[in-house]
Image (cartoon, rainbow, N blue to C red):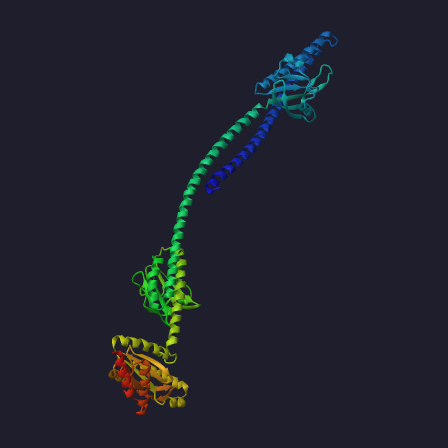
Length: 586
């Protein structure tokens, strides 16, 4: 059964059961009430009729006085006694008829022997033919306890009657035969047709009312079902739209996650977030700041939604979210608390969410939103975005860290030998396309072993770091400095001639020579370096040979007194190789 049908059928069934139970209950209650009220009225009438019977005693007294004034032995006295008895019975008959005129009652006077003294429904002449009422249950009860009641069908009146009999304790009737004074019983009866008619009218009224109520309930049920059907349809359409919108959001969120996972740099991740996040949160302006490895500064990497009112860089203590360890609303619970990294306080509410990955804070996601924005609608979305961004930025930083560890020397911060070989291959390919030169310099610190033995390895590491910094300061931006091994370094200078390489080498020697080295307030003296230079393709046709020739030039610089740079000299073998290469190329 459909819901719309249940809405109509169930109320109707309940209404029908309730109506039936109500009608039966009211009918039973009213029937008992009407019967009780009828009995009560009949008792009052019977009692009132007995009050009038006292006049009968006066008539009887008059009849007795009249008998005393005549001779008791005469036959005329007996005639007077009969006359007085008839006179008293007529008085009872008149009283019964008078009371019956007050309503639809039947009043009957009965003595203790069951003799009918008066009846409002028959004439005086018919009293002699009325059967004795001594066996009537109401009369028997009245003689015993003073009152009696019974209900039975009257064949005389052809209807069901309610009889109530009341015995008088004051009025008496003297039987002419026994000369005994009997108490008088007044019996009042009423037809039960009035009760049946009242119940019938009530039943008709209840059924009519119940039918109208059922029709009203049916109409209201149909109307309610129609309204509910419309409401359900509207709610169904709304849910479909919400599901569709939610599906789109999830798809965009998955796309964001896939794109972020494919990003290799923070710049690429910033471009992706700047493009995708506004589609998920169109009413919000936002930005992302990441914590530097020094943990004392955050830099903004991207922002969207218009000109950003926050600072480009700020310290972690300037953001309430980082200080609390969880998200911070600027107008939470009506309390305005803005972070200090805003250049100017926005006229809208702000939200800062820490970006976490593996229990470590790596940045902050900032939002600016309208004051009347429904936060519950967007809260799940920005939490999901913050979680995805946190994991992505952590992965990018981890990849950068691993990449740095793979290509850089941990002590000096220079590129390692592996990276140098990759850089030489790239430079070689570029040089072949453009026809440019590549200068390779092999650098070695003079007497470093002796220096290391005299001052210890800590001092040696300190010197290597200082020399590496001087080396980086002396090179051009496109030059590549690598730690080749131990105290030996290699510099690759793309698009560099012999003369330019010699100038760079001289600058390096001079920069290292001027270093003032000290460790723990202990002067370490000075250090010098020797440099060997070889140029591709003048000295060799392959990069391996260029490195080897540069290394030979380095040994030549050491032999010539150290603290100097030497350019490799072309030997006969080198010239022959060069000529062979030229012939092969031709």
